[in-house]
Image (cartoon, rainbow, N blue to C red; front, side, top):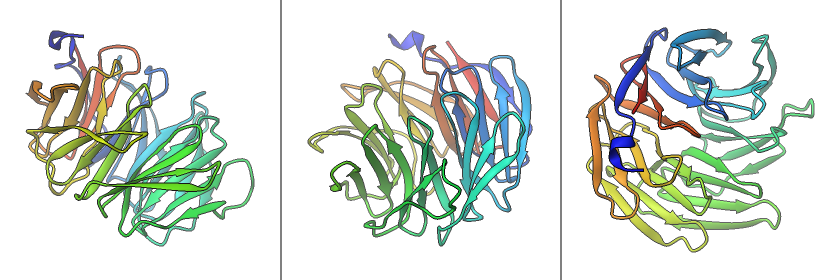
Length: 299
């Protein structure tokens, strides 16, 4: 993919949230997206047609993260009310609430089979919840972090958490082993490369860092954007050729994966970019912002 194939043309603006949008995520096939924000709601959209489909309301405070199962039947969400909500997508009904975090919950993820959910909290813990049992207690608590856990990624056998304590920690659930990579700067977002070999970590010194997952070696650093006080997402494009991330000045950056040069930069929003989500197959992406909008970008 050359840089002219990167999405930077605004196709649609999705409006409906009252206040800051804290996350926007494509679903597994990229046909729909979900957003959540300060207005305590989760919204389901068809971003390609610019259509709002459904609103989910139950959270008592801001909603910070949302994730949908591979079959699009269930949602998980979390936020400032310390609870994790497990939803039926089509009816909008809350199936279960998981309680146990002592403070705000920053991130949630389903595992591959949607049988388990992992949440990351301000209480310095990752918690694992069983969606199939009727228990509202966590089946596992990982509390080796020294500060707020901001982001979580899952593989088939591992849970990976990024924390304000400056570490990315990987827990192998089969053998109970923990590996810790210390980046020396607060980590506010982590994402996996599509080939699963690398972790991209956004740090609060305005630097994205690429780590080799097996060795923990720092492979590359990406700079130019501003990330000092907000949680701003980062990810790789679907071909793993470029790294993309938002900036606190409202711009979006694309870097070359290998040489870390800025290959594209444009003003996407009027305020802090909170979220970037790249389409799993096409060259399109969605971004969200404190300015209250979600924007769809195409080539």
